[in-house]
Amino acid sequence: MKLKLLLGIITCFSLATAQEPTTTYVGTKMCKMCHNKAKTGQQYTVWLESSHARALATLATDAAKQIAVDRGIKTAPDKSPECLQCHVTGWGDPSGYQLTVDPNDRRAMAKNAALENVGCEACHGAGSEYKGKKVMEAITAGTIDPATVGLVLPDEATCKKCHNENSPTDKEFVFEEAVKLIAHPYPEKAQ
Image 1 (cartoon, helix red, strand yellow):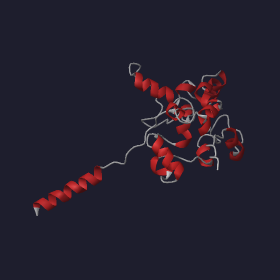
Image 2: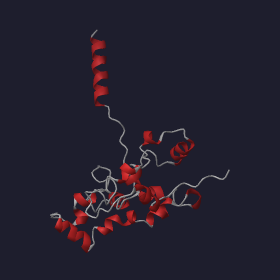
Image 3: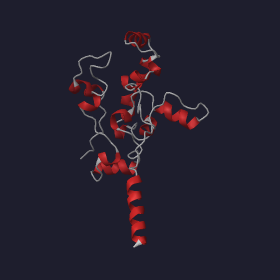
Image 4: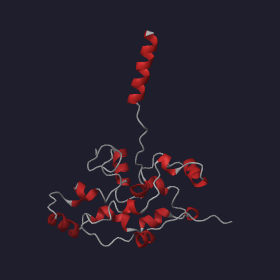
């Protein structure tokens, strides 16, 4: 009886303390390895030529500094959470872009640099679970549901997390037009 009670307590404790695996951000360079080839659509090159690839740099401009002053933001825009949340990848997540990183930790510095700007994972979700070739092939083949590995298929709501009336440079956001500017489809396979 005591053994059953003890096993029951251990089982309950184990279930109560078990945590879901956490999907983490890996950085745009991980995506580049496979998504910068002509046969896969050169999505990295398309991104590199977009304003998303320069999002963090815009926060260092005089215009951004003036917007910060006008909004009463006391810190430089490129150091301000109010601005960074839409200008880097993974802001607010422990595995996302960090405002400060130990300069002696080369790996952390490199990872943080890979999360600068609005990278792939800002729209498609943290990539640690779907970054592998076998997983991506299974997603393409339809044998894995993208959501089960954290892959987001962006929609208008994804974009409007940043492209909205709270943005100081808000212009009318028309999803159907905006998505064409950043389109980076996977090429259709020849039949």
